[in-house]
Image (cartoon, rainbow, N blue to C red; front, side):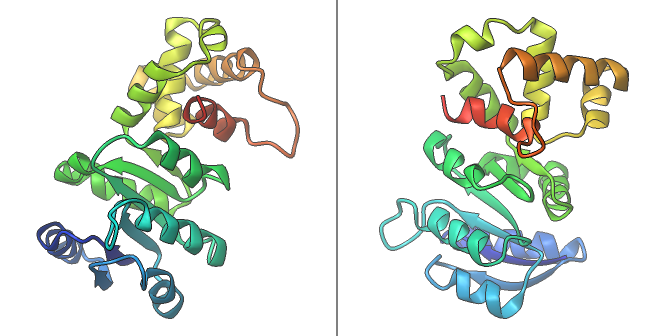
Length: 214
């Protein structure tokens, strides 16, 4: 795949570029700031952009704002946002406009090479990928206690794996359930979370946002 990296840490940026090149991917640009990132995406048309949230000059949310601009310009481009810590507000902003082809990982996850590469492939294919540690922290902090309290432990397990971006088959594999059991659990979870049953809503994404908006 064609990838653009935007990361102000030279060591991490060059390390990611080398890793991706060794895996047969083409790094079409490796940038040290996010200011030129949207224009670079327009010019180079990557499949996936990897961008740090906190970038120069203020090291606040430059990377996130660039990611949102790219999403508005080229919604088919996959975006993987990296963060040193869980940024609940930023994660919500990233996913609010539609979560297909979006990823949010903690930087520690990059060291787990197979998981990082798998996340990129899933994002390129249009899936949503959220770091398991992010999910756990968000679930633990959620203020929707009245809704979450309706879920059984198994339903919470299913929802947690769903929030990491896995398909029903992926959930079944990780929790050692049948596909029919996963479908049954998910339908129950969606109903307990009061998610609408309409063609205009994606209940899987709404379930994830329920946590992120808490």
